[in-house]
Structures are given as C-alpha cells and as structure tokens.
Amino acid sequence: MNPDAQRKAQQRADRIAAFRAELADLEREQGLTLTAEQRSRLEAHLEDVLSALTRQYGVAVSESAKRISWGMRIATFLGGVAFFAAIVLFLHRIWGVLPSFAHAPLLVAVPLLLLAAAEFAFRRGVDIYHTALLILAAGAAFVMELNALGSTCNMTPSAHALLAWAAFALLAAYAYGLRLLLGAGLLLFCAYTAALGTAAGGGYWASFLDRAEFLIPPAAALYAVPMLKVHREPHDFDFVYRLCGAATALTALLILSERGDLCCLDLSARAVEVLGQLAGLALSAGVMFHGLRLGRSGLVNLGAVAFVVFLYVRLHAWWWDWMPKYLFFLLIGMIALVLLFVFRRMRTRLTERTVP
Image 1 (tube, helix red, strand yellow):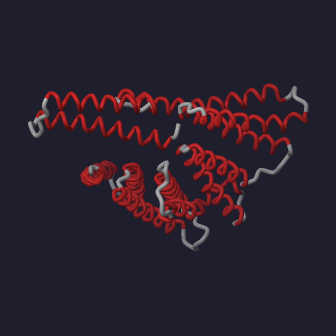
Image 2 (tube, rainbow, N blue to C red; image 1 turned 135 degrees about the horizontal axis):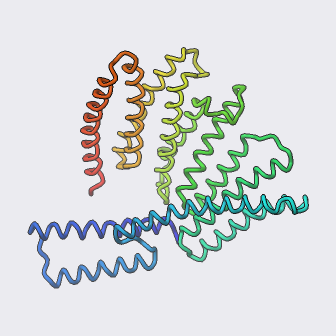
Image 3 (tube, one colour; image 1 turned 90 degrees about the horizontal axis):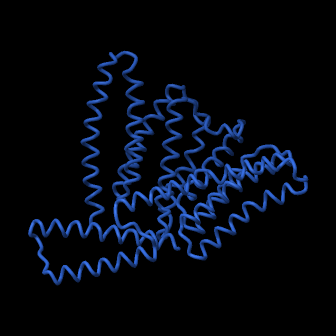
C-alpha cells in the first residue's frame, strides 16, 4: 500500500467528517437547507466514498477509529522493540554453541531476511503497519549486527557506525515512505557529524554531547533542505527535516546554556550560558513564527515549548538568587498568563491559515 496515497485518503475522510459537521451546523442555523432528495443523494455519495476509502486504504472514519490507528502506531513501535529484544536474547542463548565460522553469516542473514520479508509484504499490499514493523525489526537487527561483528573481530568502536545506521534508516525511509525512520536517520546523521567534530577537536567521539555546538551546523542544514528543493516530497518529508533540525539545534543550545563550555570562542562560562539562552529564545521564537507561516502546528508547538523552557532558564538565572521564592513563582505565573494570551492569538492565526 502506498503510504502517500493512504495519507491522502485519510485527509479526504477527515474533510468529509468536517463537511458533515459544518453542514449540520448550517442546517441548524438555517443558513442552508437541503431537500430530502438532495440530502439523501449527498449522504449516499459520501457513504460510497468512505466505504471505498476504508476498503482500499483502511482509513479511520471516526474519532474512535483514529484512536485505534494511534494504538496501531504505538503497537508497531513496541513490536519493533520487542523484535529487537527477542533477536538479541535468542542470539545470546545460542551464540556459545555455534561454531565460529557461523557467527558472521548468521549476523548478516538476520537483517537481510527481515528486509526481504518487509519487501514481500510491501509488494503484496499488506497494511503499512506490518511493513513498518518488519523494517524496524530489520533496522534493530542491523544495529546489533554491526555491534556484534565489531566485538567478534575485536574492532575499536568508531563513529562511522552512526553513519551506517543513519544510511540504513534513510534508505528504508525513502523506499517505504516511513517518516519515523527518516527522523531516526536524520538524528543519527547529526550525531555522526557532531562525533566527527568532537574527535577532530581531541575528544572521544562518543562524548559529542559535551561539544553540543557541533550539533548546530548539521541541524541548520537539515532545516534548510526543504528550502533548496523545487518539488514537494511525496511523503511530507519536508516537515520531518524541519522538525528534526529545529529540535536538534534547540537541544544543543539548551546544553550550551547549562554547561557554559564553547570550544570555538574564547568566552567565559557565564557569557556562553547567556549567549546560549538568548540564542535559544530567538531560535524558538523563529521556529514558532515560521511554523505559523507554513501552517504546521508541530513546528509551532515545538517552538512554544522550547521558548517556555529557555525563558524559565533565563529568568531563573536573573531572579532566583536574590528574589523571594514566592515572588519568583508569582512572576512566572503572570508571565504564563501573558504567554497563554499570545499563544491563543497564534493558534487563531494558525487556524485561519489552514482553513481554505
């Protein structure tokens, strides 16, 4: 089943539900009155469309069905984790009794077999949740394979494993239209870039979070990728690029604002903390307004949460040491009221942009 076609089918089902609700309001307010014949023909047509969409794409036509769909997504993720645990525990159980020459072929065969099963399910039109479950299991097996082969061959841990994992996730995401895997691959790519920067600076690559400034350039590149493309991605991958880029950059600035350690500039720890906090406030506000302009509630929510976090960190640095604690929390509450008013206005503007 084509994930993009399924997404568009779900969007049409949502539009039909919104149309029915609005039509009911218009009839109740006597803004529009349909004859019995018109209403019957309209309802018959809508039912035929919804039946076709449900039969062909498995769309959710009610709120309860949508909740079940979210449950299926959660079950897919948990199933992938369970498959990973099962594979690891099974190999641990039989590893000692296998001859040495069988170790490498077995490790290579497991992810390949899971990939083949996923491809077979995808070609046969099996529900996308089952395909995603097999792909997640194949990815987990691939991660385990590289780690086990490295231990078997007594290889030194390397940051290049992050690149291999990222490449697997990105290729699978584009092959099957899976946004979750795309996000995982993009985050792994940012971690790989930061690990290389940390190693080049003389640190251990796995401690790249101690040099969070190296996360900012790849994060900015991810956010800019949708702006460089002429055609829109068929699976709405542009949003994933922006979300991962913004989340990574905001996380890096939050770490810098707490650690106060910046390798690239000769600044005091206090100056780095203030710079990180102010940059985080500016970036989170920018993400909010850009999400508002694009009509993407996910970016608006991310920017809003990050703005509140950075604002609290900054106010804590300004007022906590000298201000009475009750007054500090009173001011925080008053600022929260102001932010609620601002966010309500932004939500209204976002709704106006999304309504045709």
